Image 1 (spheres, rainbow, N blue to C red):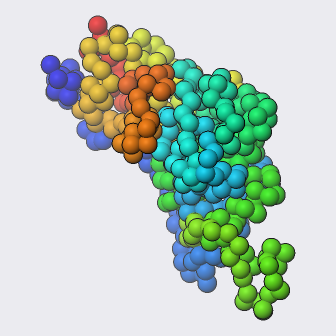
Image 2: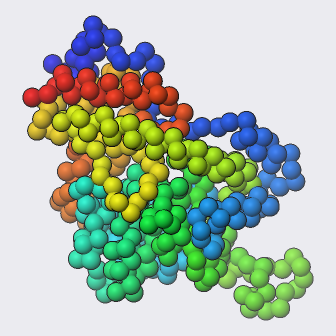
Image 3: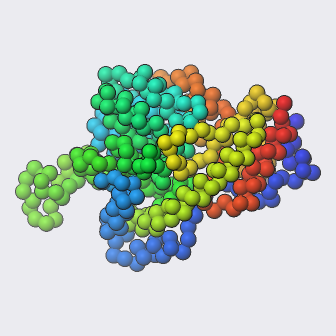
Length: 401
């Protein structure tokens, strides 16, 4: 019997919910609307004062010395690699369980992504796998805070220091997370963020890079803004006048607009509120799902005080008469819209053409076959959360072996 027909029939053909719950959704309030309208009525829609205000706010929230706002999280990763000096012939170690940008950023610089397997309990990159893959060509490690949980930064820092590598944290999921009491953004050599609408805070699209390194900061500014400077100390000749500027690097137009910055400043004012609610939902999910033998919950490092972007549920296929695909369809039939994060990056045809192949990271590949992302966002009501739990419980009971 097909899952998508069988599960609703358990309750006389009625799904758990009449309306759909999506896996992620932004939350905007009147303060956000006012913040955007304020910018729209101002003299600057881009290249204005809101960018500096946002960057200062990010520094205060993360504890970093410098922040550079950019157009999206992918741009942030690209200029982080450029600032780190990643180039042709280099290798960059990262995880396959991530969005493609975490690996693509190496390719943009002419370098080679090298995929390290994951820890099967936390789902983050395994430091020992990283250590085993370091070669004389390795330039950097891009460690992804998958779901919002911090990577094992103590061990990764040791490895990078031993081999002279740059440690880049892809914190697209982890704004608001703390590791050993320090906020994400103030620990790695460079940390990147994404502010897409399904993230904890949003600017529509948008990203940022934080660092304590003055030289990296100068390079981040250049690469994000066409490689152009108005700083006389960086120019090759005396300025012709106050209008004068020079292009000294081949940079990119990765600017964030003031409209986006205004929205994000307002969103960041709600970060602690968002963080608290997400943690509350995760606690309820963990409590409920830890009692269901057909599923497994993600484990966390004790050092990581996590603000979750994603809630990953892992099924145990040996205990069920359906696989992950069947479970996914069954959840949809209950009007619970899930997602899967992520397809291993090297599964994609583009990477296959580059010579990557299945079998590189067995733990990551097994994880992909068994996971789905459940709804997690600030505006989920307690009733919504209980409906998600009930759908999982119902499916596990119906398809249990």
